[in-house]
Length: 174
Image (cartoon, rainbow, N blue to C red):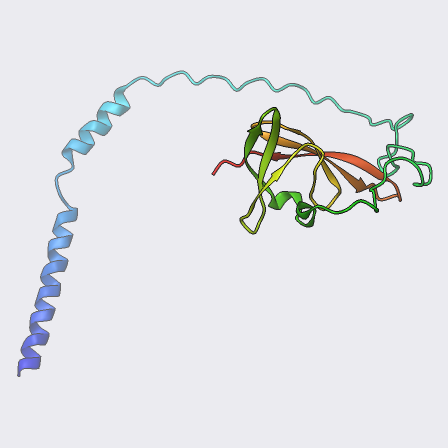
């Protein structure tokens, strides 16, 4: 008995909700129709013409006299002369870390000498000077300013020789 009356109550509530929802959709739309009629009475505006497209100009590639992109840009003898890393030099501590893991955190001036402060990936801060080596590619510090440490690395060129590559360790901004 209670179930039947509960079921009847739920059914009546659902029907009343449906009827109320249906009557809400058929409300007064005269203000909307009036606004639409006003918009239609306005004169149309001028549409700007499309911009003129420039005619297509073809290009003919002529590689005559140009270097092949697959040939080396610098002629290297046999890799025996020129720049080479010093294999007999004692390695410094920061040469065990790659340059991208080192962060410049500041500078230190003692009398007339300027030192750079570099934080390694283990969180320790190291004092470096011009002439010290950093990074895994024989990177020698050339200059230290308040915003960066300039380094030149010696890297293999892929053909048995070595080239110098400039690099920077910028001042870290937290």
